[in-house]
Length: 318
Length: 277
Image: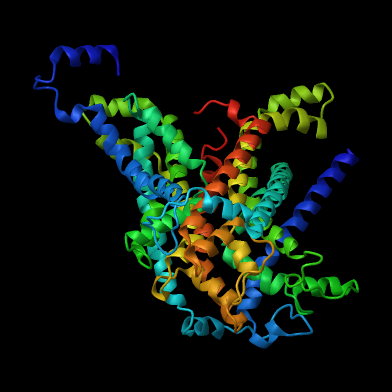
């Protein structure tokens, strides 16, 4: 608000006939932002607080428990070897999938960005999986690409080279199911992040490369000393998105691995575990909430660590 | 010079191989949808493509009594359209208010929203379920739609976009006596279609493909979304592979149509979502 306007407002006072109630900036702010904030409070903030509260109670089959149990739910969750193993699994999964997706999508962006012909075609092909759901992709991977009998596509292909068919999903040693799970996610995610990188690459000023070429820096050197630093903002954002996505892994794990007999005891992401505890037969909201709180804390720690490593915390907020 | 030609050839070679690999799953989907059950479960050999495409698979998959494909497609359509429209309204207004308001606490409210952005939505599904079930919304469209309407990411992106929107246009409107709401409706929105379309497509895709929340809330068959229906095909005891693949192909039709017609906008939108700024 300009100083003049402010002066006029104070001079005229609320009694002025020209100052209507609709002039209040507070009113306008809440008309625009109020609906969103109200919904956010009811469906995000309050549930989280409620969940923290539940995590200290014996809340089996109830969401309004009365029996306070302190940290018992937390210690039971942390002592449960299957919850601990799911946490370890998820950390390893994130540690692999985040950098791999990052490198592959950046590499594709560099390749597509440098292509003079058919650039739009390649971009579309790599972006197309974005339209596919995790459920459909999991279906294709499980029942067609990685079909466990000799009639699976990959088994047919490796058969040409004389290899015996592999039961990709039903054997634990070696854990081939990881190949299935990781490739689903790569296929679904790489194209989206490639488009983000492509846009960022196009914004790198051309004269930087020209100047570097005069100094003899081309190819890898130009990439290392010009492209990568210029992509820093995009890179940090992409890494953060990938990390959050990895934490949310559920869809492809559930659809690739679970059967009518339930979910197998391996490769179980924390969300599948929490899903079973809170919404399975036990309906134990106390334990489920404690697990969600533990998971949130771990995510926060990793986000801060990754932010420190890549420097996202040093940036301004706009 | 020869090296440059070599580099160029290598680039196209790598790109072409990668493109082929990326298209394989789509081929598999089409193949599965048009094969007979015998061809799909064939124990000893792989059929590359059915010599007699089974178009009747599509009609059959709609007639399956255990998986209500038609009903769940309608559910998904209602959910995705409603969520897309309402997210645009709610987040668009909130983003504009946050970008333009002069009240002192606007930034504090913005930081609160950013804080919720950092909490992965999926981690909150247990508490959100608790909330929705205590409202009695399990297995209802309300329960499927309303909790997904308050998307911090969309609000964040709209705010970033509106911060870069030329103020001169709005000031001209204000001098003409238009209030904030009028300015927003008649000046800001008509000049932001490109960005709005981008957020709309991203929201629609996310809503159509959502799985965890519909799985948690859609406990009765009548409230299944298309992804939940497909999932029951995958995990069912009796396999019906041809029915499953044709259902999956049908489920992708709305999004594939959208991609065909809106490809340019979607890509442009993803590029300018402000993530790069």
